[in-house]
Amino acid sequence: MVVDFPIDFVVTWVDDGDLAWRKEKNEYQSLDHDDKTETRFRDTGFFKYWFRAVNEYAPWVNHIYLVTNGQVPTFLNLENDKITLVKHTEIMPSDALPTFNSNAIELSVRNIKGLSEHFVLFNDDMFLVKSVQPTDFFSADGKAKDTAGLNEVMPVENFDHLIANNITIINQNFNKAEVLKKQWRLFFNWKNGPLNIYTALLYFFPRFSRLYDLHVPYSLTKKNCSAFFNMAPSLHEKTVHSRFREITDITIWGVRYYQIVSGEISPRKYNFGKFYTINDKDKVISEITNPKHYVIDINDADTDNFEQITSEITKAFGERLPQKSPYEK
Image (cartoon, rainbow, N blue to C red; front, side, top):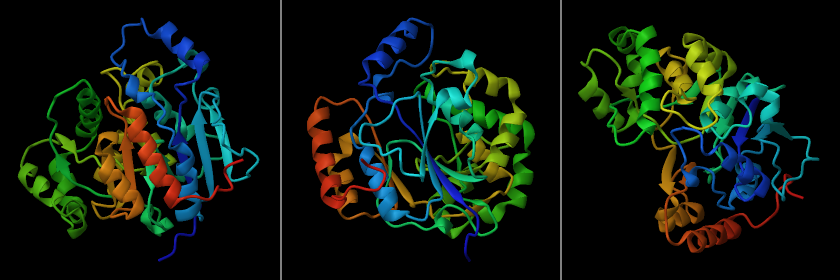
């Protein structure tokens, strides 16, 4: 079946090498906030290959929205009519800015002027590595392509509070037993692969502990964003106004949770994408040169060899995608 509606890509980005941005961030750094992780802001230098990959593997995309605080990648061709730079000031309240909280920014992307109802949200470390079609992200009837599975929260860091906050909203508004009865074809599906085992083991627990989170670009609709946020307007407002990540935040993952439990998804294979860190250099390079998945997440991580690792990964990208895209100057 053919998707006959526009699908936009939204990607967020920050240049931590910008001295003005660093100065502003440091002015707020003394505030009592939860997240001071430097790797959350570090630029790996791979970003131009995000655009080359979109041009090569998803030329059908309707429009690309790049969300920044006003920073513009030096390579970017803003004269290309398929790309729009969106500043935080255009989508967030003035009293919430400046912000260094990716959760707050992602909760606000639905406010982008001109954004299509159906869109795919990328982080700047998520890269297409194979050709994809619109039906890899949405079904013909407009449902987001995703994979449903149960999981548990295993607290090891403050980030786990965010997952608990999302799932609390789901439990307050949905009955787990009723959801699993109604949506059993989503939660027990051959495309879920080993996630079916997790779901079976957690099936009889009375409430959702967590849904299985896949580190891939999320297919979302503006309607479903609004539905989830309206379930917890005070938490939504608090998150948007938190300049750094806080343990009270909710996240865009909660919209995905809502889509799953309300049956607003169409099953997609669990291994559509793969999560790596830069410390998985050899595996990342293998995926770039001979991909086993359609999209990979190259997450930053603490390492003593950052420049060497990123140089080798950049070289692999350059060999696979050597030609400038129309999105570059």
